[in-house]
Image (cartoon, rainbow, N blue to C red; front, side, top):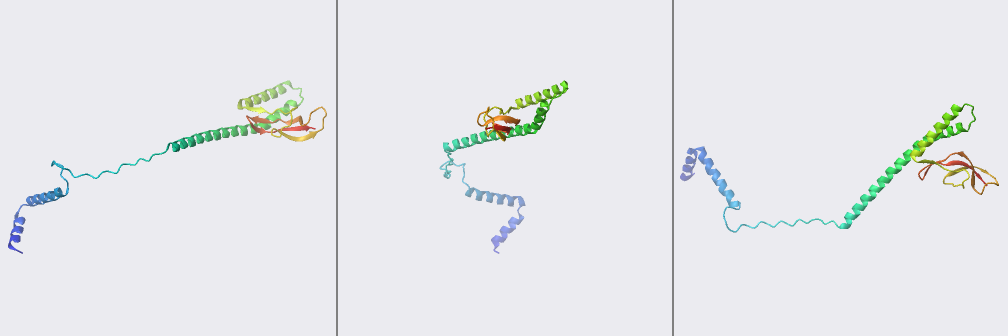
Length: 192
């Protein structure tokens, strides 16, 4: 080692630690200031690179209209399905009560000397008919009407000169509808 370097090392080793740290900090700051642009000094500033313009994706009006139409169709379809489910549930419930209706109808046709019993059966039948009416259930009119395969189930055929062609002569079991939906077809006898 040269004498100058030895002398400097000795001076550094003899200098207090705080002075050495200060010198090192100043040297680091000087190096950092050389690489960073200084904003304190007036004059021309280095130009910042221009940012690329943000390109907004333009969605055509047609796409919005289609989306709105799809949503409207979805809303209508789900409302229709909901109504259909409600109608089906009512129809299933009414169908479960139809054997009770049939039994009450048979009981009303039986001759009895007990007037209280007969009145009780009639009241029960009237109450069941009222419940059906509140639910929107109607009885299919069949006797004396023209035969309609969409409403009637023909189980017998007779020849009768007094009745017209394809006329319902007798109803064996009443049919019921809920709105336009047939819950049970009327079981009938058709003439001619």
